Length: 636
Ligand SMILES: *Cc1c(COP(=O)(O)O)cnc(C)c1O
Image 1 (cartoon, rainbow, N blue to C red):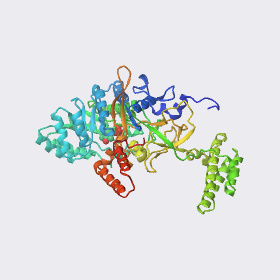
Image 2 (tube, rainbow, N blue to C red):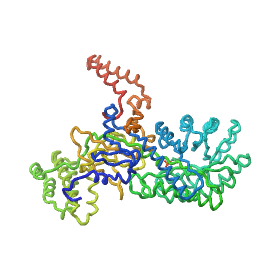
Image 3 (cartoon, rainbow, N blue to C red):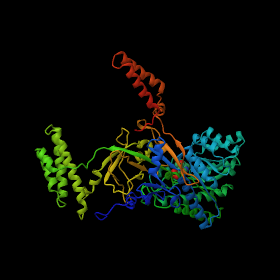
Image 4 (cartoon, protein in one colour):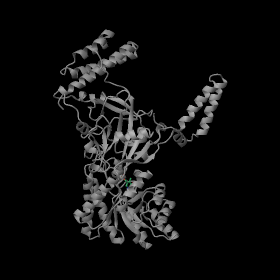
C-alpha cells in the first residue's frame, strides 16, 4: 500500500481473508460492517451490526450466538448438489442420501431446521447414543429418511432401534462390536421385529490430520474384515443375511487431505463388492463424516484447512466406488454421507464486545522526558538509544535493549532502583521495540529476531466471553476460527492484538489467527474509542463448539438467536434461546437458590446484631444478592 492512500473496506476484506474462509456467506459492506449472506452470494445480505442493535433493543445481552437458518439450508443444498452433480456427470446409477450426525450440534432448533429443509432430500439423522436416539425417535417423522444408529449399544439402545421400526422409522443398526450381533438376534426374536443392519468397517488405512486416530486398525470403533466374515457366518447360520443393508466407515473428522479419503473409499469399496456377494439386500454405502471446513481459508492440508472442495470430495467418492462396482459387476449402491461439520459449522457466528485494553506495549515515550526524570545509568542509556535509533543500527540496538532490560529487572529485584525508574525503563524498552519494529519495512532483509517483534508487541483486548464455553476447540486442540471486528472496516486497523477472555484462566486467550501462509500470532484491530462499543465476531463455530463447551468459572451458555428472513425479505428472530442464568449454573453444581439466600440472610442478621449493619442496609444487601440469580453469567 502506498503511503497516504486511503484505507478501504476492500482492504479490510482482504486483510481478514473473508473471501478465503467466508464461503460467500460473510463479507464487508459499504458501511464497513460485516454482512452475512445466508443464501450465498445470490441472496440478500444482513448487516451484523444491525443485528446486534436489534438484539440490544430486545434486552438480549452480548455475547450472542447468531444462528443463520438460511446458511443451514444453503449448506445442505450445496452438499446435496455436489453429489447429484457428480452422479449425473459420471452416470452413476445409484442415489445420494445425506444424513446429519446430530452429535455435531444437537440443538433442537438446529436439528429441526435441517430436518425441515432436508425433507425434499429425505435427509436422515445419525445418532451415537441413547439420549440422541431418544430425541430423534420423537422428532424424525419421515419414513423414507434413514435413522443410522451408531456407537456402542446396550440392550436398551437396541430395543429402541427395533421399536423405531414398529412405528415406521427406518432405523439401521450399525454393528460396531461382534457381540452386538448376538444381542440383536435375541432381541429380534423376543420383539418379533426384523432389523436392518450395517457393519462399521475398521479400515487398515488411516485418515490424516488431527483426528486420524479415528481410523486405522487401532481405531476405537468398527469391525475388522475378519470380524465381518465371522459375523456373516453367524447371520448365515440364523438365516439372517438379508438383514445386512449397509456398509459404513468413518475415518475421522476434518479430513484435511483428500488422499486419505480416496484411500479409504478404495478399501471400503472392495469390502462392499465382496459383501454384496453374500448379502443380496445390501444397498447402502455410507462414507461417514470427515468432510472438512477451511477455517483459515488457506486451501491446504494444514490442520484447520482442507486441500479439496466439496465438489471434488463428491466426485472422488462417486468415481472410486463406481469403478470398484463396475469392475465386479455389482449394482451401484445408494451413497450415504454423514457430513456434520461441513453442514453446520458455517451457520453460527458468535458476537462479543471488547471490555477494554489490558497490557499495552504501544504507549508513546519521550526520551527527553525520561532523561530529565531519571539518572539511573541503565535507563539513561535506553533513552539515548531511543534518540539515536536508525534502520542501520536497529538490530544491534535490539540486542542491547534486551540486555539492558535484563539488567534493569535484576537491579529492581535487588532493590537498587525505585519503582518510578523501573516504570520509565519499561516505557523506554517498549518504545524501542516499537520503533525498531517500525523500521523493518526499510530493511532489505529482516533478521529472525526482528521478525518476532510483531507477535511480541501485541496489545491484549479483553472480551466478554469464555473461550471454554464458546470455542473450546481453540483451547483444547489449537483449532483456528476466523475472527474479525464487525464494524469500522472502512478504517485501517492500526493495532495488533491478542484476545483474552473473562475466565480466571491464563489459557483463556486467543493468540493464533487465520492466515494463508502460516498461523498469525496477532489480530489487526482498531483503537478503542471512549463510550463506543467495539465487537468481534467469531465465525464458523456451529460445529461441536456448543456441546463441547463447558462451565469453567461458571460462565454458562450464551444467548442464542436464530435469524431468518421472512417472505417479504424482513429479518426475523425465529427463536431466542436465553443463555444460562447465574441461578441455573449454580444449580448444575448443586447450589440451591433458597439455601444460599437463607445462608446470606443469616450472615446479614449476624452483622446487624453485631452493629456492623443497620437493618435497612441489610435489606438492600439482601435484595442485591437475590437479584443476581436471574441475570446472565457474563459481564454487563
Ligand atoms: C462424528 C461422526 C460424524 C461426523 O463427522 P464430521 O467430521 O463432523 O462430518 C459422522 N459419522 C460418525 C460415525 C461420527 O462419529
